[in-house]
Image (cartoon, rainbow, N blue to C red):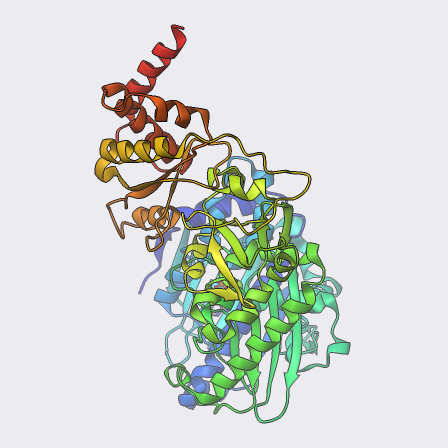
Length: 618
Ligand code: ADP
Ligand code: MG
């Protein structure tokens, strides 16, 4: 076949443009990326060779070789891994294969300087080669195939592919170094970069100089080494490689489980939110190894989905090497490893939670994911609740449920919460007026997931969780604090309120489920509450956004008998249009405060204008 030219996917061109035209201070990381890819490729071949040993042919010693040719101005990275065929080359080195990089591209703006910071966060993988090379060749033959291929590009919009008949199995990346990047032919420089970034790679990385081979990394799997011999830097570099992440790990957890089930775990929790954290598949990402052979990074049974932010490696002694990915699903050994991992991650989180600031950093990024466990993992619900932190009406700090319980008022026997989108708006909700009056703390639950667990988690340490936005709250037993004496504003006479309630029901009809006097409102004339058995209005809005339901549920309108407006209404003639208009205005006002869109905004505006006109001509 003759040479064929392809154009890069538009996103790749955009990315390359930034990579090539910017002075990236850390450009030496291209080598880390190429070595990381080579190591992944060897891992993958080692795995398929368990069932197809013939793929290894006579070349079963995996290694990564660095060589340079000063006369030709090249640096070459060679591996004997799984390799790529023609289609693989087009797909992997012509498009953005990694969703992380696509996410990165989504954040690109006009400011190239800013973009570089973002590159640091996401990494650009293979394309980072163009930071140092004006031309890149990838010569590859896929394991088990007879024909090899050569991919060539100058990174300016297009690449070519033609046959490379004598290509060896694996992949050889030849970098034609830019004039200003010749330093990457110096052995001391290469040695230093490998030591810094790739020492944890489990395969030998070999540097060829004057025909002599020299192993330049430690070449043993990092997680098999004793903790005391591993530096923070090495852990971090390993995390970057294993998790394809570029931030600092927030948590590093390295331990060996011994006993009935033996495994080694080297796990990390990132500091930054991974781009795919809220993808629908909710995939967990830890890599499974069996006796140091990579098996899969897509193992459902290793961690529960609500711990999908945990990255790293688990290496089992007990699973069979030829375990297929399908067989893993219901493997009892894996089930035990999973319990062990969850237990360790929880206990580590608990320890770290003693430092409130550090823990808040974790919680703000991953709390919403961990809370999925509250409705998914009944067995561990109490443990997860202990790890949860909440914003409350009492101040900006996150608190635990234990802290909440400790601060409960005399006579209070329930844990109160309110759900919504925005903590600041929630804290000013009329539903909380009665709670403020008595100084009762309320949890502000603003993650969408909160709506789903609050209804299934009924108690925490024998304290019932109760919504502050339901009509049935009784704060009567709880004493108001001394500094906030209960000033009983005079309410309208009870008979008048009863008549007003009836008249409002008649005017509002099916738009409300009920009308009731409220014991809790202090400032607002009215508010809407969900009836005992109805879903909360916030949950309903979430479901409506996802088109799960289309009709709003009518709510209960609560009125404040102590409010001037309600007293005026109670005293007025309830048969005329003026009363009906006032009733409808009150309901719309309650809807607005509740965050509910008005069913007829034009009618609302007309009524409001009329009422204002009347009020202003005094
Ligand atoms: P990532 O490694 O995160 O997937 P890269 O941009 O580094 O992203 O690489 C893109 C893809 O190209 C890899 O996923 C892999 O499929 C393929 N690839 C890169 N280098 C090699 C290699 N040395 N051998 C085989 N495949 C490779
Ligand atoms: Mg890579």
